[in-house]
Image (cartoon, rainbow, N blue to C red; front, side):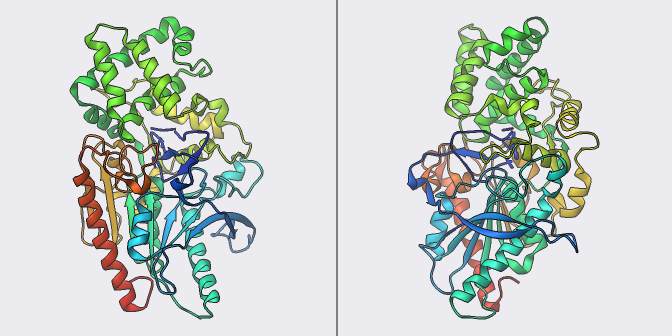
Length: 489
């Protein structure tokens, strides 16, 4: 929500697009899904900004305040006037445009318009000039879903005005990845009359308090040899923290992380990102080779963290600093505090170490996460996980016409719906580097593969087979909508 620090944590990069996410660890947003993209215009269908007056509190009968919400539209493939409208949900980071992933292919195939609404509070769509804990009280998935519903109605009416029609309805279909994937599924659940169906790519619909399956999946994705090396590194780091704390943190370029838990979370996420976003060999190959050569494993991991995680992938160490998370200034390119608020109030996804056989340090536990929530946001802030799952249903979501897709190596897939049920098919894309949002983004996830090109996935056929299933469901559900003359059934 990835979706979304990585492992999710939200990544602070020079140039970001939310393809969401998560999902940090989605990276960590789910938990996010964030991708560093080139400034090459080919990476976007459009970056032209539009604005919409959105209601601040959809649940208040007397608070009528509004704020400006950013959105994008891409009409090049739109079959006027009756073509479908694809609503791409932006998630837990700044939305810089409509990225040219596999949705661009689908828009061409179906003659669809593509519109994308930036999530409230993120990017340029903040209702306030300061993100104090009090001002964040309107930041929730429930409010975000209402934003989408109100925007969808307004956009349809605007389209009708341009065509001098009254009451006309195009067929709508909703798309999202990671946390946005969850929002996509939840939108169809809560507003079934407003969309013909939804795609929930790596959609993390299950809020999880202690998400131990996350770390377990990292071990499975790594394989026995790489897993053993990662575990040995964690043990060495834990021991070194006791005797050589300052020098150890300096070795990883993370001297600013005074809280040991923040530092250990940073190291854990650095490994996660390789599997989540389709670069397993970038992590495992040098570490296994270092082990076989009898080299210093901590030094080898420090090199990977600095060269790949911080260097190539572009993660900022500051993202993990709780002092940074306390910063209430509104910053278009920095969404770390915002996602953590959603983590600490709604979904948790606490990526704690399992009781045994863990990859990450056992010091990354429930107390660390709860202390972070309290330290950053104040007393009384903790995730209402049970309430979230009661409201949406978790993996028992009672929806219809929702496609769930997940990558086999993605640790976030255990918070998604992985089994098919009537009218809600679920597909696992299985390959060596199939991770978060592979169906829409290809492999690896960063930098973006234009139109989600799957040629760099270790099993392109596996990706293409699931994509064909997606097309069949979208085609069927759009045709059923059109047959009734309504947006949905």
